[in-house]
Amino acid sequence: EGLGDFSVKEFFGGGKKTYSDDEVEKILFVGTSSTTPSINDVSTQYPQPWLFFRLITASIILFYGFLFLFNQDGNTKIIPAIIFSGSFAIPLSTLVLFFELNIRRNVPFWSVIRVLLAGSVLAFFFTQILFSNTNFLLSPFGASAAAFLEEPAKLIALIILTRGKKEYPYILNGLLLGAAVGCGFAAFESAGYALRFGINDIDELVSITQLRGVLSPFTHIVWTAIAGAALWRV
Image (cartoon, rainbow, N blue to C red; front, side, top):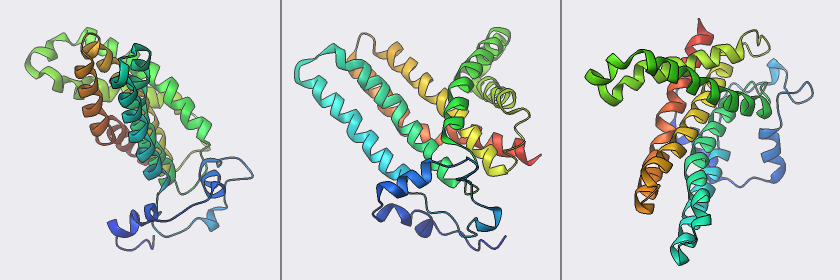
C-alpha cells in the first residue's frame, strides 16, 4: 500500500541515468540470505527499472552487428549468431525487466535461469502432447489454437517447477517466474521459426527474426507472467 498513482514518466525515468558496475551487481546478485533485504527495507515507491533498457539497446546492436558482418561476405558461420542474438537477446532483456520489478529481491538470478531452461523443455513437451490430442482445434482456429494449447502448457510447466517453493510466496515472485518460462519458450520457438522459414532464404530468416524479436516483449513472456501472478494470487 501507499504506492500512489502510477506515472509512466517516473517508471521509465531510470533509463536516463548513469549507473556504475556496482549498481548492476546490486540488481543481479540478490536472493541469498545476505543479499535479500529485510521486508521493512523494501521501498514503497514504484521501481524504476533501467538495466533492461541497456540490454535491449545492446541486443539490437548485437543483432545488426552480426547481420552487417554477414552482408559483407556471406559467411554462413555467422548465421547461427544472427539466429541466437535475434531470438534470445530481447526476450532475455525483457525477463530482466521482470527481475527488476521483483522489488522483494528474494529470487536469485540463477533460479530464474533454471526455471527458464527447464520450463522451456516442459512447456514444449506439454505443448506437443496437447497438439497431438487436439487436432480438431487446428482446422477451425488455425494459429489462434495456440491460446488453448501453448498457454496451458507453459502454466503446467511453471506449476511443476515451483511446487513447494515456499521461499517465493509473493505475487511478484510468480510474475517473475512465469516470465522466465515464457521467455524460454519465446526464445527457443523464435529460433525454430528462424530456422524453418530461413533455412533457404537469409532474407526470410532476418525478416521473421526481426518480427518475433519486436513482438516478444508483448506475447509469451507477458502472458505467462500474468498467469504466474494469478496463480500465486489464488
